Amino acid sequence: MKRHKMIMNNKCMCTSKNTEICCPSDEKLRKVWLLNLEKEHDPLRQTSKEIAWKLKLLANSHRIEILLMLEQREHCMDEMARKLKAKKSSVSYHLMMLEKNGMICKIKRSRFAFYSLSLNGEKTLSLFRN
Image 1 (cartoon, rainbow, N blue to C red):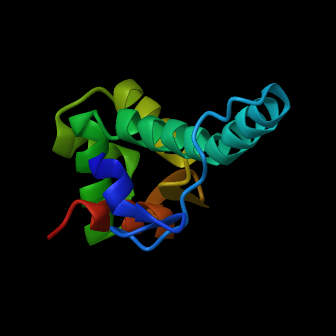
Image 2: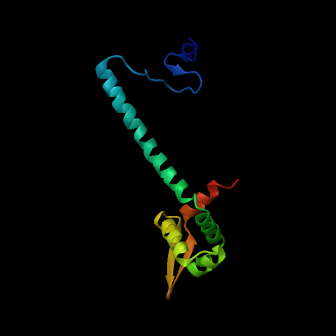
Image 3: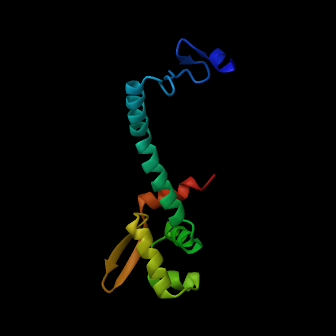
């Protein structure tokens, strides 16, 4: 009964959005309704997968530390390995993951590669700041 009080003239009083009939009993209408429901939800499913992947990427403290270092200035892998007190192969793996996901940029200068924070990396870090 309360639900009927909240919705008047097919308009939700809480958010002023139109409501649609939930679970139509007519079989043809129900099929169309279910297809529309799935189409409506597909972008949300994709977005949730992308967010989950980014959170997994950032679930490693070395990767976050690398992003924070690169926020200050560009670094080569040797510098980062020393600062992280980690093996170069491990740092190389983390750099590859961050670069593959667009968080950092790699610039080659002679025989050295220097890494810097990308715009995507800056945006990601800013999400976790007050």
